[in-house]
Amino acid sequence: MLAALDKERALRVLTCSTEDEANAVAAGLWMGGEPFVLMIQHGRPLRLVNTLRGVAMDGRVPIFYMIGSSAARRTRTARVAPLDGALLRAAARRLRRPARALEGTDDVHLIPEYYRLAQKRRGPRAVLVGLETA
Image 1 (cartoon, rainbow, N blue to C red):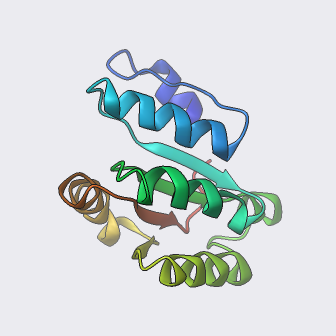
Image 2 (cartoon, rainbow, N blue to C red; image 1 turned 180 degrees about the vertical axis):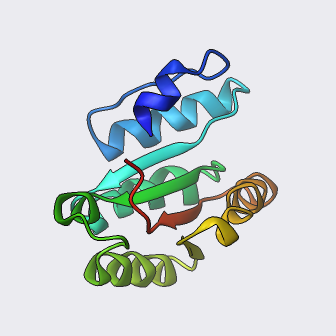
């Protein structure tokens, strides 16, 4: 997906080293009036929870997350590994922020829907990308 985005002239891709850095960059883009989508390929699902709470929730920054599973890529399975998905959904529930699974073309409508929800409610919203993207 990143290779395809890099070729797109209308979009600019910024690469960050950590989830913490990505959340801070997203907050800066929002403050500067720039639209963005934060895409994370997670290896450890709960790694971004502290920054998500501190930046997106407490700071009321409308961050839209597209979260993919590195486990799915490593194992070449078609869907997000059950443990990864379960942990992410549990974290979303604990933070009282819904996250929905994007598991096929019928779910693509969730991307703009959850992006708009993040903007409207000034806080985090996420879709969990459950299909191989390579």
